[in-house]
Length: 232
Length: 249
Ligand code: HEM
Image (cartoon, rainbow over all chains, first blue to last red; front, side):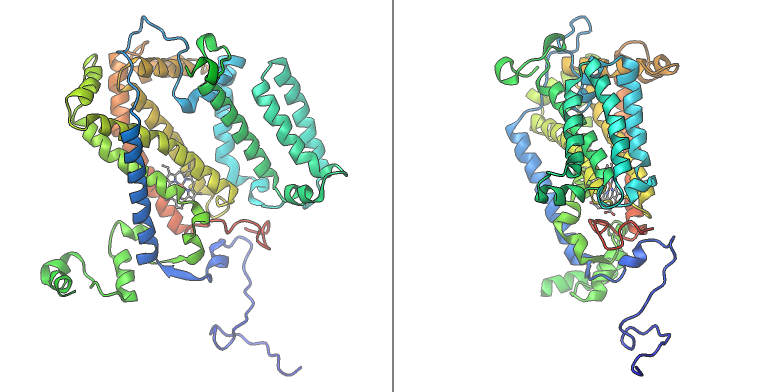
């Protein structure tokens, strides 16, 4: 095998295939460096200009079609029923309907923010390995052991709006563990990493609570149907 | 082409823009590197990161909406007084007196809602692409601060029209602050400049909305975009399902 030689050379043309030894803590960009590149001018800049134009046009059309709401002047002695916060806080306001203010207004939002901040510092997030692509029985048991008491709590407080997505997403997560699970589903689901399951659960719960707050709550925060009673 | 050359090949033009307009790679690099704004880009970008599915342009959309909000916001400031009841009267002026006043207000309002959505979806994009992984973890934290600033900007702006919607929306929200243990009531007092949502609250929200929070957001975005570059350009979806996933860092 005389055609193989070990040599130290930095010229890519002379030695097209090389081995790079990279320390574990080396930044990932070292690994990405050799991809195909384009000039930022014009390729990126043109796309940015088009993007700005689309944004301006879409907003201008929306502004011609729909007017921003304006009600009567603020009157502290005349409380509207219901009094709603802006839409992006209605998920929280909906939670306030189930739990005491210290839990719904302080504890849960604080937990959510802390949870989001620490995401990149946790191993399960940094690894993009599917839940079933490594030993999973113990993890699944732990997850079940967490979900069960949480569900009981949700039933006790009658928070169906959180209970339903929680159970649904846990069932989807656990589906590949069921022997009768169809192959296509198993292939698809078992590749989803745990971090994605958790985030999807969070987004599902937050969106459902927000949508309920926007469309399904009327006077006294009672349940209303938007198509029958209108939107409050 | 001759006109273009005459315009760009004289001392005045060259004192501002130091490179020519011919489509050479050198000029293309110079265009980006010699311009303080464009310099946030690197001269070359990965082909893959230009594809829509790498970012869905959500960061860019957030930034564009913020620019639109700044421009329309400055124009609205020309017609607005943060006092009771003048603030509400100014809304009526926009409606009936100012040319295109309603259009201006609509632009600002809808862009604000859209920005909350865009920033949130941008965060989801980054999350599901695993684009927060080292070395980008700090930029994710900067991003979370930007999300909170965006929400606060939208929320403080919500009070300014001083109509029923504004007043009660903000009352509901600031009552939640009260639930915070120990610091809650004091913090609410500080925020409102009193115990009720009144004239002082309007002034404080106005200053927060028009000066403090936008400045903070501009600073934050500057750090954010700087870090995107320093962390090696956008990751896009490259963090997903590589052979070596799980081994990096
Ligand atoms: C005012 C709000 C924000 C603006 C204007 C903004 C702007 C941008 C832009 C223009 C990019 C370049 C690539 C892209 O478009 O995806 C980017 C990337 C990034 N953003 Fe944001 N962003 C904002 C909020 C956030 C939030 C809330 C997060 C997460 C919590 C975040 C995390 C990141 C990360 C980690 C990257 C790098 C992604 C990659 O390398 O693929 N940003 N941002």
